[in-house]
Amino acid sequence: MLERFEEAVRGVYRRRKASFPAEANHPDEEDLVCFMEGKSCMKEARQIMEHITKCDLCSERLSTQFRIEPHLSKDVPVSLLKKIESMVSSEIQKENVFGIFLRLKEKAIEIIRTNGDVLVGQELVPAPLLRSRQISDFSEELSIIKDLKDLRILAKIDNRGGRVFSLAVNILNKRSQKNGRELRISLLKEGRELESYAADSGSSVFDNIPPGVYRIEISRGMCLAALLDMRVQI
Amino acid sequence: MDDLRFVQACVSGDKKSWNEFLLRYSRLIYNYIYSVLHIKGFTFAAEQVEDVFQELFYSLIKDNCRKLSTYRGRNGCTLASWLRQVAINFTIDYLRKLKPALSIDAEREGGLVFKDALVDVSADTEKLLNDSDRRQALSDCIGFLSSSEQYFLELFLNQGLNLEQIRECLKINRGAVDMRKVRIFRKLQDCFSRKGFQLDSLR
Image 1 (spheres, rainbow over the protein chains, first blue to last red):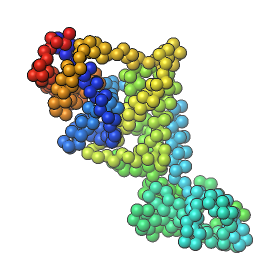
Image 2: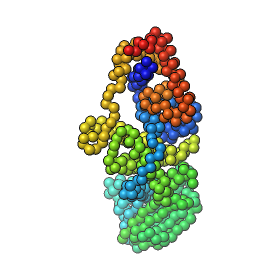
Image 3: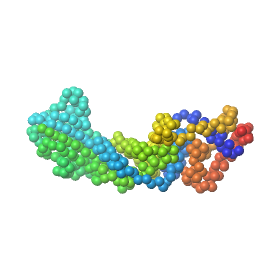
Image 4: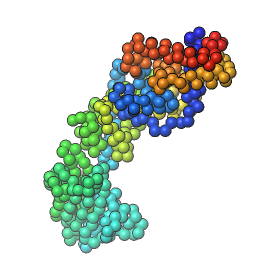
């Protein structure tokens, strides 16, 4: 009789649950973990319990945890791990690179490609918009800005007679708008470090650089904070 | 380095930290994906487990590591626990998206084996509760239960966890789980009776 009653309650319970409108504001992974590990405050725990009794998705996400065999230990196939390493490496780089491709002319700088915004007077203009306005040549000085995560990087390029250029890199913390501190800015060519400065004031200047392909690494402690890839030709 | 700073180093694109991340957590993520697929009754070919694994990693790192950046380490939530839940949620969402496309013949096609119960478990209940008054009475009784009691019913009746799994979930001893179950069903029976229905009317 009791089993029959349980079965009846199950059916009614499911019907009742299905009649609730779809829940929004699902708890995130951290909320669920804290709840399951008994680390949520009482108010949060009650809210999650109430949500779970109305939301099948979250209930399934939570209860699945308790069905899992804890001692399963399969190795990740080596080929798969290699794929992931390569995906992570290319994705991280893509998101974290400020690219500038220029041509030095005798008395001008031509922008061939950049993913930064170009400072035109007081206005920041994305490079594709400049192209649509058919503007590619600038006077001998050019400033390009790019936001990468919490940093705003200003690259100021000076054409020195069409043969060499100088590059000033200025870094601001995007939130505080103050100069980035405890940064190291290094200029590399073909993986070899040419110059490197501890930029306490958030800026560094590299002078008399001949055309070529360069990488400027901006690091904070042991962490790489941003990359500026620069290609300059004549 | 604590978990939050470690994640921040990964988010900032530090290669060493990413190597460490893969070393420490790829096996954990892989095993959780595998386990969820297994307990959900899907027997996947290795390539399909790998697809979920790759998609999950991509979801963590895309858009400037937006997903990974949501880890905050609140209330001592460790990165391993967070990634465990991320892997579970992601795999469940993946299966939910896949479900409508599955064919009952999938097993014969050599791909996914779809073992979800296709039987309507509420069919018997429909016979038991063959009038809307009884259904409504029982539904009202369930509504009178506290949130924690309804949560118990959710785990036990809706998600089908056994009492041992519920013990682990509620972090109480087994005796307390048994007692709680008895108490909840007794409450429901009493409520049902007060509304003028008897258990033997459930035939």
